[in-house]
Amino acid sequence: MDNQYFGEYAALLEEAGKFHGDICAGIQIGTRMTMAGLKRIGISDPKGADRKKLIVFVEIDRCCTDAIMALTGCKPGKRTMKIRDYGKMAATFINLESGKAVRVATRRDRKVSADPSSENPDFSGVAEEDLFSITDVEVPLRPEDLPGKPLRRVPCALCGESIMDGRETEHQGQTLCTPCFEKKNYYCVII
Ligand SMILES: [Zn+2]
Ligand SMILES: [Zn+2]
Image 1 (cartoon, rainbow, N blue to C red):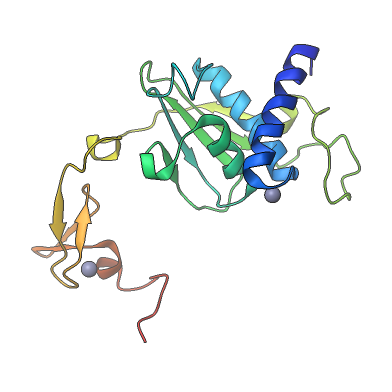
Image 2: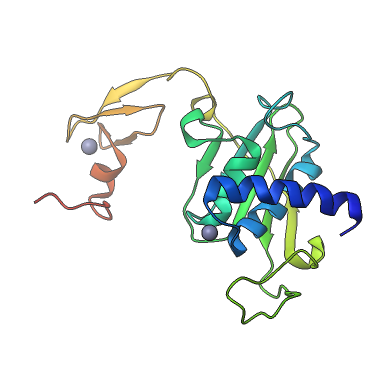
């Protein structure tokens, strides 16, 4: 890393660490991931002037997501962070204004500069291209996926609970919520 980049990294790392509680490997990766993603989609002030231009998809419910949340200001409750929990250290950064989007994923073959057996390796010496694979992508977003008031709300024909924002499924003439439609894989069991 050059000096200017490292100075910026150190400050962001501290901010992400404060939000998360410590500076672990995931916070380091998430900080670098955010820097790499935002740079490529042309966003420099995600929490200020650019705050209405950015949506992020994250693919894991671990430390690196906290770093991305802290540094981009994107939040699930603001509908600017979408969590797709695939258990993968990857995130997609979308510039809504230009339409430019990139997916940043950790490389399987990534090299670490510090002792890799260490519990908390230091990735600061690892070049961005060695840390991540970065791909241009297109992300189809529906009006129902964007920030703003709920566009619609319908009841599920089976459980009666309300479904917002077009997350329902039409199945054999019935409007169903996802768990009723799938009839399995619900995260809780009624006792
Ligand atoms: Zn952590
Ligand atoms: Zn239902």
